[in-house]
Length: 187
Ligand code: GAR
Image (cartoon, rainbow, N blue to C red; front, top):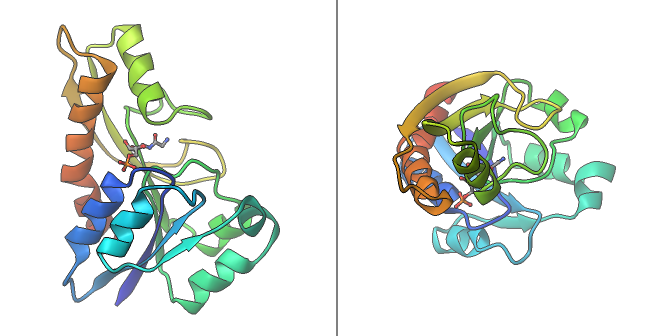
């Protein structure tokens, strides 16, 4: 059995799709969901799907071995970021080489970097007047949104699209592809 820990900071619609996708899979299991945000709705989603949750602080992540100890005791093989907003520190990158995956709601390398998440990304794409956007699934490295790209898919931006309508299109792509791409990477 290969085990995934999901890291998420917010609503958790992607986390939910990933958990549901692997339910009943004999080879891959979502074992744990970790969040830096005690108020994140993703915690409710995980509990409803019977996935144990852990809330951690900045100190836990950047100044202790607490998280790595948990990941190692739980036998976690892959870390999957789903709307997680903090940088992954070097000691975790070293412990999980090419085993940490993120999704970004735009076509990297455009619209990436610190502070570019969620609606801010879609707002920037709409303001720039781009004809298309999409999703990027990539390995995580020490910089925001710069790791090696694994998969991209595009969607068209039509006249009248807003940041909200673009977010809906991008979410659809995320739900359709993220669980499948994770499964392929782990296969
Ligand atoms: C997703 O669209 C994800 O791509 C994005 O946050 C959203 C989380 O939604 N991630 C980033 O912007 C990372 N830079 P969700 O909590 O409903 O899955």
